[in-house]
Image (cartoon, rainbow, N blue to C red; front, side, top):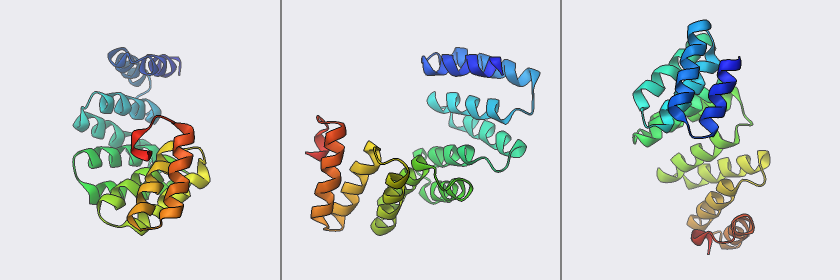
Amino acid sequence: RARINLGNIMFDQGKINEALRHYKEALLKEPDCSEAYVNMGNALLTQGNYQEALDHYRQALRIEPDQAESYYNIGVIMEREGRKPDAVKHYLTALKLNPDYAEAHINLGNSLLVQGKTNEAATHYYQALQIEPDSFEANINLGNALLNLDRLDEAIYYYSRALDMKPGYAEAH
């Protein structure tokens, strides 16, 4: 556990290669540690090593199949690779396992919005705000969705909330 914690500290400090080294050492001592695979996947994702990150998330799921974070992160990779339907599938799985996963609601909303499913996107932004009312991303994205739906008064409300959180954010002005 100490190796994973040390890796997490290195990751938080932006020392990704050092974090990876600690996660690898943790896996040598405990090869069935899903947390080490997830954290390693996160570090690799940060570096843009999508295939390696996918491999680590999938290994974590082999060990612990009900882990929402790995499904969410696979969704993030699918999204970045332009595979929106696959991203949606993984976000939905993450939400099935953890309905209170605000980031998964936000990313699912983003994927749906790009696909023109604005009402569905708005629903997920609302759900994210039920979980994390002070989420800047959920407020600004819900404002965008409501603007697309011509629900201007509601859009103004959520843009105003976002501006209260980040006064200099140009998109909300």
